[in-house]
Length: 113
Length: 115
Image 1 (tube, each protein chain N blue to C red):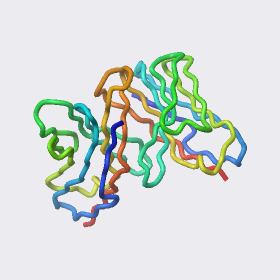
Image 2: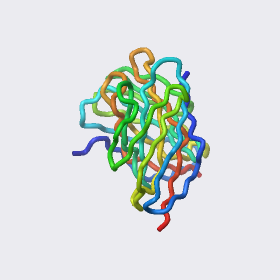
Image 3: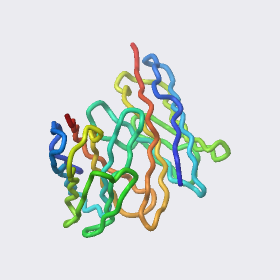
Image 4: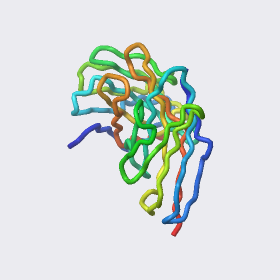
């Protein structure tokens, strides 16, 4: 019963490097999203997708890129990593509709030095 | 736009004591309200949610929450805390936005349980 799977769990990057955080879900959920979690700031929405081929920006999209070629996968790309992007990243998915439960992955800890 | 306030950053309770975590929300219409729990090193797990009906909702792990419209609050309670309840708790409000459910999370309350 995999649910939402994120990889890698831990990553250290140098400033300016690029990388992709992978996210896959096996629940056939149309909605997927990426959040970042920083101390004292809760979870902030980076990008979201309401279905394959459709993505939109959330609250803090700068420096990140996403695409959604399949229902299952929603990778998050850091184009040129900055220390300000040091954070814990969570991928989430849910069925469409008001009030549906959001299911979260276990998180990816990213440090940019 | 909706918002959520969790006024307590950190709470310490003794094992066996009762617990109440505060949550206040701001939203123009009837919101969907959630409580999530995050154990160390883990993702978030849904404890309970409310949209309509009985204002006292029961969740998993013995938690309950009460919706009070007049106070714009959705406080989480547990009669007797166990050491395994030590975690961070997030209140969230869901709102309909162009067919998509936009969920806004509070900043979280970290619960410490002492023996």
